[in-house]
Image (cartoon, rainbow, N blue to C red):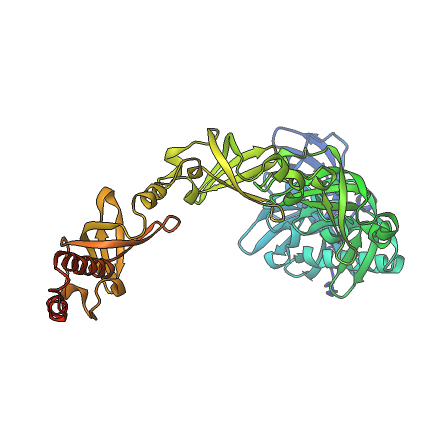
Length: 556
């Protein structure tokens, strides 16, 4: 606390005036006077001197009454119009200053005031007629307030009596107040106690709660035993509630509160009440992209994944099965007490249509059903409710290059197809459209049985053989090993594109859509036939070994 300097001014009251007339009035001295008359510009006051004085009328908040006793101060000993010039405001300001100094000397280090205005380095505070300076660095919660009619408490930092300046701090005042609240709180409560408070602010990770004038945190993890909830439904702002004190950190000024700790953790005895396979009733509380949270007991929730909603493999959404807020029956599939997770099933309480699917739709069945979904690799068709089949793009048409399915079909169209395969364990059904008509390659196989002689033109030459274009846009392959009995390194040296060749059909593979040809076999057959013709055209007595040798030499 600063030492105040000795005051030199004295106050003369009306008792002194009554006892003796003032011979001389000194400037700066506060004296009492009585208002004796008033005109438009001044209030005239008798201070007991030989000459009256006057006070400017604007120094009064309202027109004064005759006989009113007021404190006045003489600014200067020089008279104007033969009268002393007094100031009521200066006298009152001086009295206020003296009263402030008195209280300050007695240990009063707090002061109350209003924010008058902001200046270059801080704010001016009006403390009941005494001006104080509040530096920006000490404004604390008042930093963004330029002026206010509300009064705030401050701590007096310093007083310069000579300059009559006061420096105050809002920050120091609040620090002391908070420290006092902490002293009170730690003396009154300990960890584990129940305390009453009210929510003041929602944050992403929880709620700030005002307790005994201090801000404590109720973390989201300590609000409810539930996994998913809305904190605004757990605790309303401004509403008082009981909380359990989880931790008090005086050094870091942190108080952690718990709400769910007021009740026993329902997961501790979960196995006493529920078993895997049990059927329970639960209310749908939250729906997510992957599944649904179901509340089946106070503080207990289970999760049902979308895959457990329906026996359908087409991705049934929760909106198609469960309505928020409604109650349904579910089967408990798994209980993980350590992780506090409970898995539920909905489809398990309904007959599994896959168990008898092959009885209702045996392989080879022909159906006419609607298209449910078209994808890049095929389209899903509805076999029956909750069961879809897949027509793979390769089973749509016998064409080598399937057309764009979206151009050929629309969702909702009815198509005819046959069941190709049923996989119960994976809940998959393969369907086909092209299988409803005969494959064009079966016709080709009938037309070109093995050993059939065909004539075509070379359409492609590769290191592994010749591609030969036959009639009706059928292309066959003569492997390099089937081109000639001679060893050929480069087919290009013997054949060219467009050259006509004759070959023998070795095989037609319907599944692989492939015709295997052999030029070598044709040459061997043709050679044999020519030899037979020679033998038939000659008499037995005239056929000699030389004829046969000459024939072989000519064909080499």
